[in-house]
Length: 450
Ligand SMILES: C[S@@+](CC[C@H](N)C(=O)[O-])C[C@H]1O[C@@H](n2cnc3c(N)ncnc32)[C@H](O)[C@@H]1O
Image 1 (tube, rainbow, N blue to C red):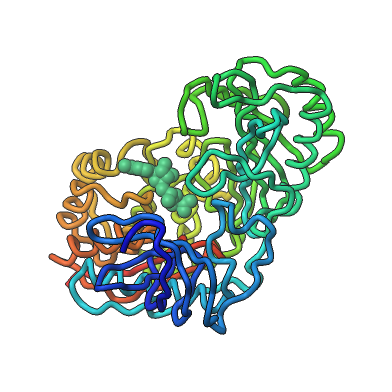
Image 2: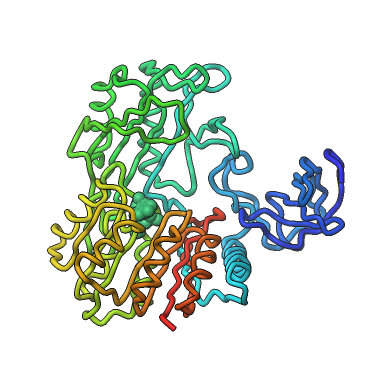
């Protein structure tokens, strides 16, 4: 194989990003936007020692799962990557991907027991997060980054964003343009507004806007706020986050309230949650409710258990489970999220929860020792990188009857289950489709003490 060579291949598998995989002389070629069973003419764009990357230039034989993407910017956008196939086939792909990844990591055949699909897999996101910048003609632009780049694709209508959030975003961009508010220029690090974040409580319809800015002051800030609040009664709060660093990290350290209280509320099931600008809150609340119900079913609670909710964010899983346990202890690294978790317990009239700020790997062993606690069930919901080895060692040491592991990364889930296998066996595994039409996967697994 040589770069720029054009060849005809058959797609035999999928990679973890939903791309197709073909093979030539046993060398895998990764080709985006092609499906298993398709015969495709591709152009080789990269050749490395163990694999190559190709670009589809003609689909010669098409899969029956292929559909025309319902989005005009799909092939350039870095958001969705599975809009070229029907929803059912995205689910099949995810099942296969989880089974392959986990089987490889654990060293035996792992099966997905259940998939929780989304009935209406559109407009599901409760958080819109668009960069602002300049296009090649120097005009202000807002939208989604193109794949593997910082080129902003103007996004006026996105099939996975909440419709009201998109409408507010479009209004703000128009205001920025009409009033010549300077947006951030990544090349010379000048300008002001760099990101627009809009969060909506899907049940309450309350909206929080975060204006991420390079400069302390935003030109026509007062006028912008007055106009937005007048136009959209759903906007309950607007905050300014100052990030002057030359970085890909979106939020800076300093947040100021410009309008309202600095937070919004939403409901998951019957429980009410306070959401602050920096707190983690699952982006698809319809599926989150189903995910948490499955996690609680897996926990098999009777009301007598001592439960840990680790990596608890604003306390959602623990609070969701609090009616069915004796005591819930939550641990989370972000202090504002723990403040929200405490407040969330209070507003829901819950008295059997206690929350701690800090890293699980450090705080869990400390509170177990200091308070002489044992655990019956542990909910584990870490970020993509999974659990630190020290945290896994603590789980093995305190050995609760059940571990319920919620994961947004099958690779680290598999790695951690392999380590936990010393004392635990995997009982059941469910995929909950939270990130429909993207290759992101959310799973929940239950492990039982051997
Ligand atoms: C996937 S989120 C889960 C949050 C929550 N369980 C939920 O469902 O909304 C992971 C959380 O872990 C927190 N986190 C990351 N590393 C951590 C650590 N070492 N110890 C404690 N919390 C951590 C993050 O701040 C984030 O809130």
